[in-house]
Structures are given as structure tokens and as C-alpha cells.
Image (cartoon, rainbow, N blue to C red):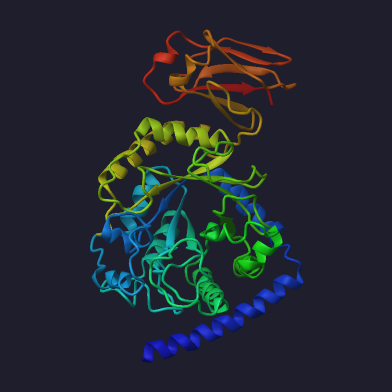
Length: 460
């Protein structure tokens, strides 16, 4: 009772402060998305190119993925009982961060609260959290934030805008089988969200990005609404300024599969590189904001005990390169096991990716991909006076290159040299007004590597 009374008092204070901040942001006509700090954060975000996504929570104990509460229609009264047995004895924040850093990742994004409503951090807005509801009793997010600061890794927070357990969440198309009663006051839910976001942005140091998910839960009942109506329905007109007021350099991303809304600072593509829509979810175009593709290492986001369908190391490298070659970051997911350890199959691939990036990271980190669109043979990245041709041997034969590749890039700068990146072996080339031809050694298409890189250096 004592803890609950303190919680209610702190929540009331946070809500009061939150309301004050929102008025200030609205009075400023919400220009925070263009402030100097955001621009710097966007530039730094683009340069990172590779991050790790972490889906972890009570659902990991069931081993059926993060949507098990929805997919199995588990009662909102029964599901929380999982917390009573949640004790990830092998969780080690230092080991996690060290593994991800060695893999070449420059940032981490973790689920602070997923659709099941359980908070992986010490929140005063609800007892349903890792500290108060579990025998583990430790603040996972706090420990991870400390290690990220120590290792120089940026930390991003995933936050679900929907909740399958709370009675005040405005009901959408998912979570209908969890047994909740009549709809309660939705304004209370959005106040709850604002309180938690305030905590996340004031208790854990610098936050690189708030990564929202769940908007699509209302895509059926808002289909005929204007974008402005949808924006206000989700209270983005209050939530986004709140975030930028609390941390002026914190980026905002939203996995809604639409064109970005005002106040969003990155654009997210789920399970697809920008420009492709094989998953069939993306309904918008490609903006000029920094881009990010999130993808699973196997087929699941949260731990699934039957999912051993891990993508191969070559496939993951090709995906990373394909993403960078479309001017986007790759946020690659890992679903930790119930005991807090990382799956061995994931660690093996991360180690291989780290070794590859140690050798080839120059062609990925800090690069852009705006000069040449993806080609039949691969993609192109560039930085300063260098251009890297990422040639995929398994696609080279079908590209009908006949021993040479064409780069449709026109420039007044003359090519100084062309060479194989891995060996520095010189390559012949011809530069025309309409583009560039690079002549490849015999047998490139049969090489058993995911990415054959050619470096072009131009006169400055």
C-alpha cells in the first residue's frame, strides 16, 4: 500500500509536469523536429548504419513469440501471472552490450514495453513491471543503459502504443480475445503513456530514439480519417513535443507503415529494405528522413523455441549491404532466451558479422547511397572522394555483365583509381560522360562470398 500511494503521488506530479511541457511545445508551433540537436542526431544516426533490436519480456517464457497473448487469446487476468516466475538468472547487461559491440553494432533498441503491457523498466505508473511484479526485481533497462554509456553504444527505446491488457486502452483490431471488460476512459491511457515516456527520458540518460509500434492497431477504424485526425487520435500532437522537450536530440520513429507524420525524425521499414514491399505492409513512399529497416535474424522477433530458421551469415551480410546501399540502417533483431542469455545461433552470426565489418566497415559506416540507385548486380555506397561497388556474386551472372559492370554516374571528377577492396589489386575502367565501366577479373560470379567490393577513388 505504501508503494502504491507513493506511485499515485509521483504519477500525478509527472502528469502535471507533462501538461506544462506540452503547452510550451504547442505554443512554439512544434519546430523542435528541425532544431539543431535533431539535425545532429539524424546525421549521427545515419552514420551508424547497423544496430541491434531486442524483443524480450514475459512472452519469452512461453517460447511462442511476442504475440502469444494475442495468438492464444490468453486472458488479461491470467497472462500477468507469468511475471511471478520471471527470473532471468543469466541476464548480464555487460555481456549483451559487449557481444553487440563486437558484432559491429553502433546502437541498441530494446522493447521497454510491448503489446502485452509488461514494462521492462522500473516505472511508477504501474506495478506491472520487472521490478515490482517479478522475483527478479532488477531494472533491466537501467542496467543496460549503464553498460551502453560505458561502451559508447547509443540506446534506443521501443515503446508500444497499444496494450492488450489495460481496460483503458482504446480497443483496436488486435487483443479482442483477452477478455477485457467495457471500455474505460482512453484519456487515462494516454496520460499513462505520457507518464512512462517521461520516466524513460528522465531516468536513463541520453536516449537516441523513441521507437513506437502499434499505430496499425487502428488502421481499420481510421481508414477514412484525415492524417491530421489520425495524428490527434493517437495524441502525437502532445506526445511528440513532450519527447523533444524532455530530450531535444532524441529522435522519434513510428512503425506505422505510412508516410512520416510531423515530428517524426526517422522513417522505419519493417522486414523490407526501402523501395521494396515484399511483406505487403508499407503504404507510404520513401521520405528524405534517415531510414531504418528492421529485420529478424530468424523468423521471430521474440524468442520462439521452435524457430531455428536462422538466416545464414552470407544472407545477413547481403541484407546489411543491401540496406546501406539504399541509404538506410539495418536494425537486426535478437530474441533473448527466458533465462536472459542470447541464443548461440545468434551469437555465432553476430561474431561473423563483426569480423566482416572489421575488414569492410569502411564501406558501410558513415557512408551514403544517394548517387547511384541499386543495380542488377548490387548496390553502391560512397563517402568523400570514394565510391564502393558492392557486387553480389550470386546475382552477377543473371545481370549479364559480360565481365564488366556499368555504373550510371555522371560527374566532372575524374576517377583516380579502381581496385579490389580486399586485395588492392588494380582494375581497368573506362569513364564516359554517361557513366563508368569497371572491368572485373574472371570468375567473380563463382566466388563464395556475399559481397565483392570494388573501390573507386576520384580526384578531389
